[in-house]
Image 1 (cartoon, rainbow, N blue to C red):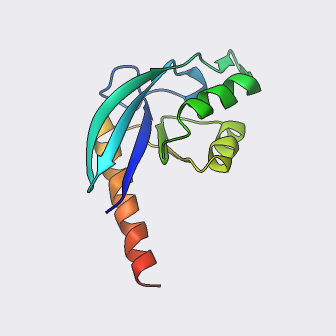
Image 2 (tube, helix red, strand yellow; image 1 turned 90 degrees about the horizontal axis):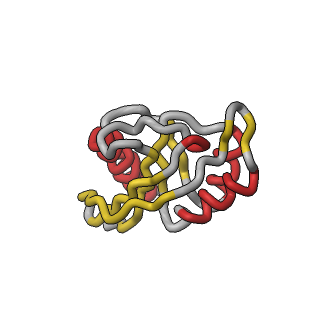
Image 3 (cartoon, helix red, strand yellow; image 1 turned 180 degrees about the vertical axis):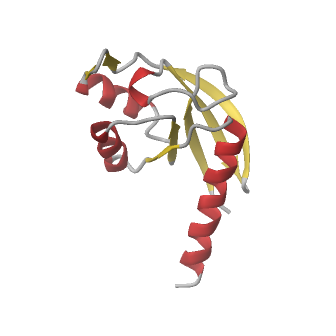
Length: 119
């Protein structure tokens, strides 16, 4: 089974309610055998102020979560999305309850694995 981490942009640990560039923390969940548990909170500095983004801050924040396979956010800009993908992090805009968003990410992995086994 897959073991991996998911970073969630949330202000309260209840709802995926933060834009990547505005978040000041990521809740990190570890997934083992399709079961997720919160392992830590990683603090960041927002990369966007007003409508401008600091590319160095975007990269710093992504480096902070580069051990994560997925990034769950309410919104993410094109630049941050491209940079995340270049680090092997798949971002999802999924403004749901954290638990529901995590279940969808785990289901996504299960479907991916199913297709890989059937190749």
